[in-house]
Length: 367
Length: 254
Ligand SMILES: Nc1ncnc2c1ncn2[C@@H]1O[C@H](COP(=O)(O)OP(=O)(O)O)[C@@H](O)[C@H]1O
Ligand SMILES: [Mg+2]
Image (cartoon, rainbow over all chains, first blue to last red; front, side, top):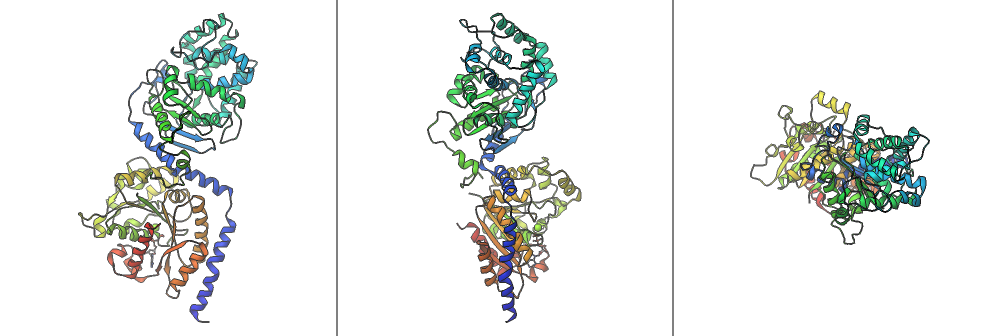
């Protein structure tokens, strides 16, 4: 055999065998999971969110809530957008690790827990499901039944919190915190300064509670319940937590990352439907019409928005509009709804196909 | 639509930087707007081929990753260094990595958010209106490599006729498939004289089931140039330069 022939021979063996050996050693799970997290980083959908962040970063409308000094300290420039899909893919851009207090977004989850504790009929007898045109902190009850209008206004939320079971304040708080943990997949702290501030200045909420006690709509453990209410509002979360909560609701009550059930499947519809009708304070009707994504906002600057069966959105940006909803968060939800056809009742084909943009396997010109 | 092309190899010294510089220059000389990013943060080198001296590069990829500057500020126009006149349509920009030991140490110690790479590349393509963006990489598999593979329209894997390279290339191709790479090309470099290039090409194509875009000889002239210029620019009529033009054509096919 000539020298070149011998070399040819060697070549016949080497690349084949070497490649086979390597292929044998390739493992499935770890590579797949790393690959999928990288694909999410590079997906067109993340690029879309990036552009959205860029587009609205410079918006300087709205004012940071300042009814207590702790909230007024928030940086108006903070801006995070996070989306979690029902199959657990997470996309985040901007300030998604910045902690803030959950505020009114907690009301949706507490409502779910009250339903689990007492069933629909009993809870309905204590809190109605009618949107009000009144402000979130108004002191009004339904004149015929004396029930607060809905679980998303302060009166209704206090009545809902009253329903949380437990032998004392600590036990009730523990139950509540572990519920939040099931939704987000991590444990949460309470912001003490915010809690104490709310507690010491919450005369209006105290008045609402006593008015409801007068009508027998809440039990007489008023101080304990109000503490619990202020504590639930002072839970520290970030935009990722909010998106994970939204995605859990979108996923039928099961956290899509941990697969832990956070809410009884029977009550998922209750929570999501009051979010749609009442979640954005007295802007709810217009929101349902224009954006069509069930959502709940908080004065800390968060918006939790749930697209059933598809994804959860969590946005964070402290400046609020006059109705108390985050200005940038609203814009983000509006764009997502329009561009991907996420309005609950949309049937027209959207500009972007969500699945294509999430998986990135079509040749989308996102460059 | 702009194209992003990653040049990668499993091992170092394969010829990635040399290949990247040559293919980028070839395409820029054809009148395109081309960007090159040196993502080989631990061992940068491609700036030498474009004769960009470290003293001139105060802004680097590192400073962008630390949030100190926007990525465009780290993009140096090296068109003249490859003989492109200012009124030529083609342009070549390089985003270098820092060669300062301190900067390298800092990035290795503290790491960085790899997503910034993705965001930066997009920004660069948009603001410099690039037709092509080439990503020169650090050898081996890392998060950065994964990301550059995932975002690329074309992945070019460089290998030498060597058992370690064969194995490594197979591993990298596994990863590339997981990352749903859209187009993959192989280039064989440093092929020594005794090997028959056509037979080698055929064998490698059969083994991996992917196209070999070019076979490059182990060349004394490349060694002599010693990374002080781009081979294709210096010897445009050399067979190696012709092979680079063939590779360039294949990037656009399909
Ligand atoms: N075809 C070739 N023939 C001879 N030397 C080469 C060839 N390709 C690259 N080299 C040399 O090999 C060395 C490593 O190349 P380089 O491009 O820096 O590799 P990498 O970027 O993969 O580490 C350099 O000195 C380069 O000039
Ligand atoms: Mg190199």
